[in-house]
Each structure stands twice: as structure tokens, then as C-alpha cells.
Length: 114
Image (cartoon, rainbow, N blue to C red; front, side, top):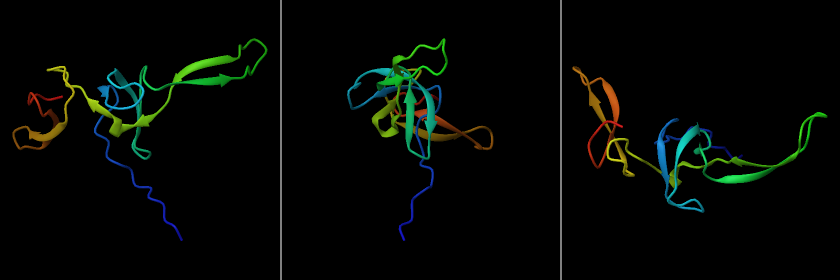
């Protein structure tokens, strides 16, 4: 019996983050993260990985045709862009607060909270 791995993967970006595409047809382009799917390890980025979708008209007044829409891409293909230094960076986690109980994401290049 083959057991599927259904455990959600840890994704380094969150909804609303600005990311840079590292590889693929949109390499070098930036966009905002629209949705995150940890179970699949994929994200959707505004204006990145556009695909053509053929839509059939459902009602009398609807128009069918070819629509360009964003498709999901693997989160390992993007890198977070720091909001302070505006450079693509890895992120570290640091604890802040008086009891060191608040975990925050920190830019590896400028050491500011992302």
C-alpha cells in the first residue's frame, strides 16, 4: 500500500508579500502574492505565470472566449523582496518583545523586520 504524504509544507512567503521570480518564463519579474496553498507547496502571484483559459458562455448574455489568468507556481521558484532595502532576500526568524515571545520574519541583508 502506497501512503501519500498529505502533510502541509512550510512556505516562506505569505499572502500580500512582494516576491521576485527566480526561474522559469517569468524570471526577473516581481509581483504580489495573491494566494498560498501549503498542502501543494504552490502560490499564486499577480501578473505572473499567465495562462490562456478557454471559457464557454454559460448564459445567453455571457460571452465566451479566451481569458488570460494567473496559474499557481511552486513557492521554491520565488524569493521574498524586502520592503526596506527593496532587494530579494532570504528570511530569518528572530524573537522580539520583553519576554522574547514574538517571532518575526527578518531580512538577512538589512536585518529589518519584513
